[in-house]
Amino acid sequence: MDIQITTKKSEGVERLLEVSIPLATVSAEEERTARRYATSVRLPGFRPGKAPAAMVRKRFKDAIRQQVLETLVQEAFKEVMEREKLDVAAQPHVHDVKFDEGQPLTFELHLEVRPTIELKRTEGFKVTRVAKEITDDTVTEQIEALRDQKASWAPVEEQPREGDMAKVLLSTPEGNTTALPDGRPYDLVLGGGQAIPGVEELIMELRPGETKERPVKWPDDFPDESQRSATKHVRVTLHEVKRKTVPPLDDAFAREVGDFDSLEALRTAVRSDLVEHSTRDADALVRQSLLDQVAGANPFAVPPSWVTRMIDAYMQQYQVPDDQKQQFAGEFASVAEKQVRRDMLIDAIAEQEKLVATEKDVDDRVAKVAEQRGTDPGQVYASLQKAGRLPEIERSITEEKVFEWLTARNEVTNGTET
Image (cartoon, rainbow, N blue to C red; front, side):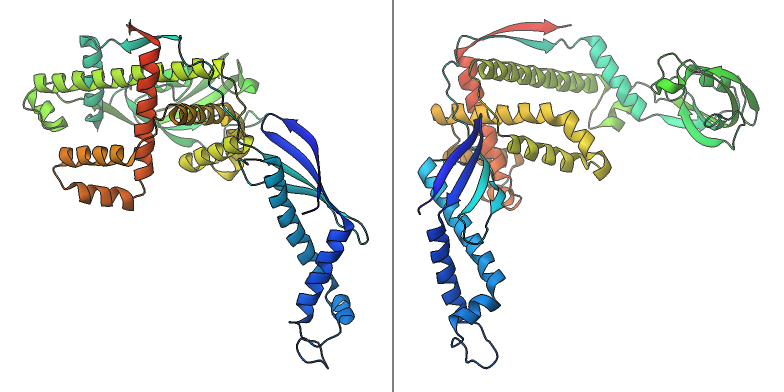
């Protein structure tokens, strides 16, 4: 196709091309399109396909022009891709279309190309693998958290203390007024930072059924700057106090938590689980550190559309409300870009070093899962395929291969986080 291509912008992965289609090509396409219309349209007084061409052009002028525009833009786009040898990263956008009668058709094509990642350096990096030390105190803290989950709450007719749950009616002035409105009900766990210290102190002076009011000073670091250090008149009515009781730390508790014969068996399982998590977290930090260093030594541009797509995925995952999406996008842009860069780097290493998961790798992984479940590999494969999880397994295997390759070629020393 006879077109003229002018590069107006070429920065990183972005390209802005001006495309011009000669008038002769436009006129020829208009003629072809008009003939096709003439063979198919119906006009009063003429049999199908027998209406004069001039009448068809006049009657269907706008439709013919629109069809010509769509056809020529599509054909020109294909020509641009072939001639410029562009590997696009996302759907291109057409802008500033000029399609005046008797003039060439021109438009701007804005697109992103897949970056070429040149891995000039992937070795010689150093990283310290830091695993959190799992002590007896760490295990005890985790078990106490389990006890807290199994705690029961019972009403008490006493002044509340830290750790108690208080059901209150709280009144504070609104706006610039000093009058106290009707109170709002709250359920507060005292000492948990749900209310400012001055309000909590007032609550802990009451017994259920009592009301008290007095001026309370707001903290100097209150999140709302307009209320920092302000003194307001506060009224509190305490309706109910509940106190938490945790179960005894014994073998019965261990059996309640899970399939453990004794408290010592529970401690062993908790320690093992914490060690596993610590190891996994340490490995993840090593992988991320290596990728960061490799990325720093081999800079490349990231297609903005891929970052946007990643942000959209985060929004869907976290079910972000429409009115918060703009703020979310701004806050997560750097996180999304880092994730996209990470994935691109892994793909580049996997392709260059031939580490991409094979069909046999996936079959072996499925067989391993089937063995752990005590079931048939064919059933597991069919189940994973139906759930659309086979690409996820393939990706996981590829990443494992890449990280094994990286750690084998770089210096990883061990440290301990206390």
